[in-house]
Image 1 (cartoon, rainbow, N blue to C red):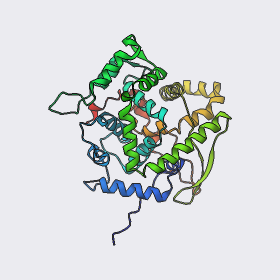
Image 2 (image 1 turned 30 degrees about the vertical axis):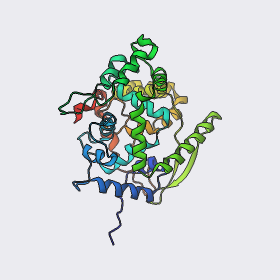
Image 3 (image 1 turned 135 degrees about the vertical axis):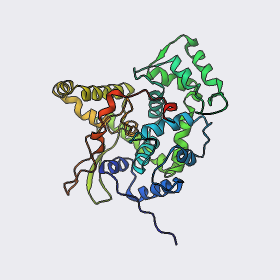
Image 4 (image 1 turned 60 degrees about the vertical axis):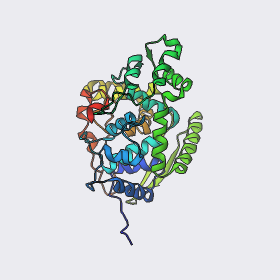
Length: 330
């Protein structure tokens, strides 16, 4: 009989994020077993090689640019390695995305200069992606993806805001195909498609509750037996997310601006707190990413401890965040 694998202790904030997705401690143990199984070096960390092993895709796959981007976003230490917490938070958060949020994720990846819109050149550059170090210069995306940009509005456009980008993906589904396919593959590998389909049904009920101005909350127990109140993630527009992350980044660079915002936007605080808990922003753990929002640390536990609080320490580099183009990180 093999020894039962026990997941390592997690920060309380990590547990709260997982409980938000209905991932109880028993399921965390399953995810830990997957992490250990894929860890070919047995060093407790993943490189990109382990991620490709998990999804069973080659680096020449159409999903490769998204896999690389997801890896960089999850890399909290910004050192090319994923800890179990990096993996379990970011990858499960990607699995938890709704359809609109998957497109929001793709939008953030393509919008490399963080100006709130994507240009035709940015999309052409993305669809020209080739694996780093590959002998062939052939892009991983089929030529149809680039052609779609010239069919959309008869090519008479230079920039797209999110709603227009979503319209592009609806009219030409293969534009966003790789992002949705990556989610499907990860859902298969992490807890199974049925688990995540149930989560999708719950998100729909949450969205409906929001129409009546209701916030869905639940009491959950952490592995340590601490009762926490979980607020289920609602729906937020791309504009809300962009404005929220911009405000947070500005506040970090200029505390005076942050104080003025606190005084003048009291009514926005609750909604901002809920935006901060969305699966899309939970994916982003790398403090060097332009969209990273430092957290204030997990809620204090009953014994007076509050976890590692590492997010505050890593908040400093945000103002100098580089554009997210992942060939730089390989």
